[in-house]
Image 1 (tube, rainbow, N blue to C red):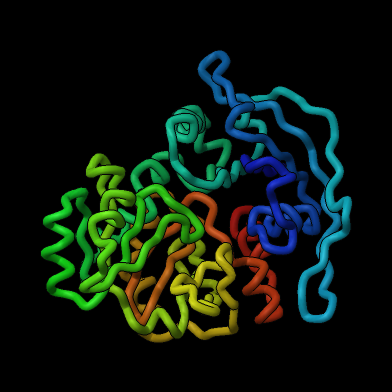
Image 2: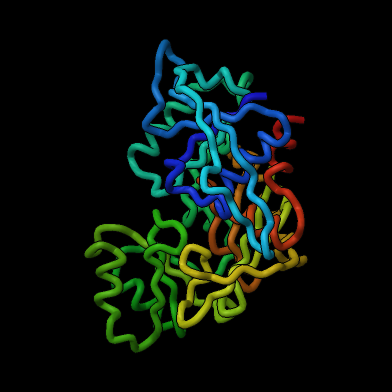
Length: 318
């Protein structure tokens, strides 16, 4: 089979961490052809989605002293070709947020792929519908107390009911721009002004969960079913557990409560065409639903001696 991956520039990807690389590597190891492109290489010609794509061959990472190690020249690219994306069996939309105007335009182009010929992971309609912060609000029974607002007074009232809050930009990733706010903080006004861009943009405000100190669990779901998890634990004085800000990863199990959360989400995820998803859970509460380019595969593989990338590819190539 032929797989196309819409990714960020290869120079920005860490092959020992990036889930896109893990999936591409697995596809190649299973004998499939792998091609890459980017959102600025997409076009519409004759009513069909086209792209300039390059075939890629990858040198698999190796396990050395209990961590992944990649060769310096870990990939080889062939000449670019301009083809309809319907020429491929599956197209993975794996560009990192923010979901800005170019990103949205790319999803409109992907809408033109015939789903009878090619599977798009994740569905472009689903990506547009599922802001990674707002989407969780559809599952009120399993999320912490949460508001979305750009109003300083609304946030102040919410803070008066809670000891501490977490402020999240709606379009962020990898923990970027997340702030901790507690009662009596003399920086209250400034933090709200910075987060909301002087009251011009709404933000997500969640009650702070003290169990965040014990970890922020990333659970990978494939077609609505959990296939693996990793716990990300804050280090030093950092309150965020995200790997991008230095969170320590640890092996973990998926609890009955977390399985129940997955069961609650599954019908909606499947309905929206969100085939490969990473959810974040703190203390038994769903905090985010990541649908653009969720990561965690490499860490789960390392800690559990599994191959989730292979599971993903096999689920599509069955």
